[in-house]
Structures are given as C-alpha cells and as structure tokens.
Image (tube, rainbow, N blue to C red; front, side, top):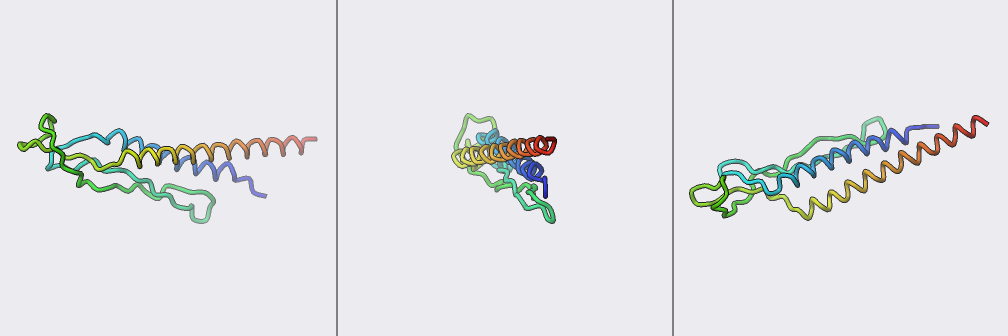
Length: 130
C-alpha cells in the first residue's frame, strides 16, 4: 500500500503556485512601456512535466514569450521616441485571467486532495488503534 497521495498533490500545488506567480508577473507588467529600441516585457509560461520514475509533476522550465511587442502611439509617455511611439507587450488580459482561474482551481483541487488523504490516513490510524 502506498501513502503518497499527499506528496503527489503537493507537487501539483507547487506547480500551480509557480503558475500563479508567472501569471501575476504577466498581469503586473501588462501595461509596461519601453522605448521602441528596447525589448518589450516577455510573457512568462510555466512548463509542466511528469516526474520521471516518481509520481507527481514538476516544473519543466519557464518559457518566455516574444520581446517584439507592439508599437503604440503615446506621445505623452516618458518612454516615447521622437515620433511619439512606445513599445508595449502583447499580453492578452482575457487569456491571463482565464489562466488565473484555471490555476486557482487546480491549486484548490490539489489542496482538497491533500485534506481528503489526510482525513483518510487519520481514520485508518484510528481504526488500527482499536
């Protein structure tokens, strides 16, 4: 009998927390501007991978999106060039919010699995003590 449900769900919670952190970075920088000569903020993506030879998941890496950005006319921006253009990131707010909800729900599901496993283990110990 294996008692690794808590560990497996714990790896999912760690992955989901990293995913939530990357989404918060993306949302915090969604309106950042830079001069047209500089790279725009690069969106962060978390890659998940199955743990080889183990149960659960781990962070396979962080991948960065394009630094190309988009040119926007904003002559009042302190980063604007002589023609009044700045470079903004191309992060989509709607997709980030959708990802945020998905990551939160996945974290909740893993947290619920940890609590259910803990309750089952405690019940098994109480049965064994009788």
